[in-house]
Image 1: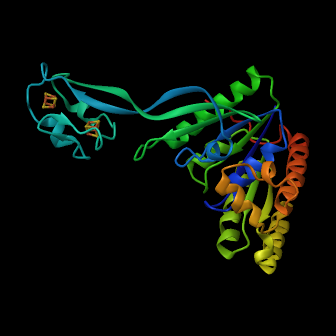
Image 2: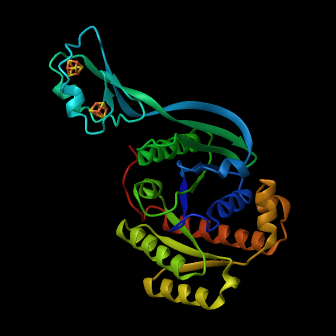
Length: 298
Ligand code: SF4
Ligand code: SF4
């Protein structure tokens, strides 16, 4: 099984368009949308719902009034002001457990609460796992790890040889959870100074974890000079640029129609470039298989 993560230094660079387009050229894969704070791959890769499960990733305190001796210690020691009149405010409670520690009567229990949902869809190109983390909930890295594990399990049970990951933007904990154990990262960037800056941070992350990384420049022709500068930066870092995706009005039309670009405009310039990039990325990830981070998902 090969695992490929598509990432970008920031949102809005065309990462999800790239994933949906590349997925269209493959029939033996599992898709994992690891942007759990704003999953949107399912909007493009529509399909039939296979499973839907609760994600319980956060703790909440509850007070048993029968045991409570009304000493007020829990309220005094809650740094999040989540306890008022011996009642726990579910929105403010961070699940830290301090109130339980200070309670002299053993009246407080901590329990897991539902903080999101995890879905499996059957799309035209294979199963897709994605999650919806409820607003204000934390632990998105943990949820990404669950999505990744489920995608791996599906690949194994369904006999599929590729896991294609749509990663979250940035280089934080969810991005790190998205690339753990992958064979290759494809970074999508755009020809701007900020795009280059974010890309370099992503390359640094990949190098730090010894994960092979390659780059594609989206809408490269909007600023050909900047594209050349980015390619030069990549060369200096020893990173291969595997594609230049041209600005293509068909992309916006396919996003509006909520369909993968190649399913509507298979001969469009951007679709043809995505096809070329996908072939290159697959072949490089097979070559590099096993050379990346050897951490296990747990
Ligand atoms: S678990 Fe932490 S945040 Fe929640 S009520 Fe207790 S002390 Fe406050
Ligand atoms: S610390 Fe325990 S006993 Fe004291 S008020 Fe809170 S729940 Fe009641």
